[in-house]
Image (cartoon, rainbow, N blue to C red; front, side, top):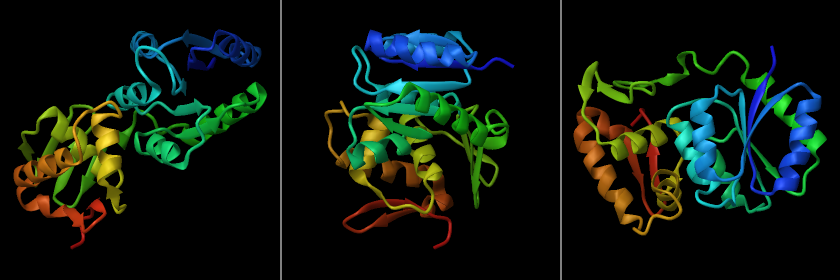
Length: 226
């Protein structure tokens, strides 16, 4: 079966070069040169992989990654000239599966794309949309949360926050990471926004609210064992 890729890169020459290499391997390449067009193309086509640049006009790659992860588990490979550890951590926290830095070899990029698909083969679209810890469950397809089987009414942002915490269960998440991942780099508020939403989320979750632990001077951790 022929593979398809959404290639999001604003450098036309680099995009064309990468496209040539993927097409030589019989991939169908769908191109986009900015973030907004990338989302349009993603919603119009059923792709097997997204290769995503970060620094782009109209909408950056972080925002595109966040948007895609809200609706799909398609493998995402971030491609950027920024090699900072914090950028890589943010990429993985937003749900990226692979992170490659420029300058890069298109041949190596194709090889890594094949390896990524091999790792994720047969997992996308199955039961990964269901997350359950203790009394709490979340259905990522319907964006619904429940405690002991009873629905919990959450705002869109509360749902995003809960999903982010559950996807990183057991890990201490600094407030800054949570803010960037859930609200975005361009959000003008501060980390108190995270604290406020955590408080509201705990209240709505009732007895399952105890799964969200405060780590003094660090941030928050989702853990079912108290």
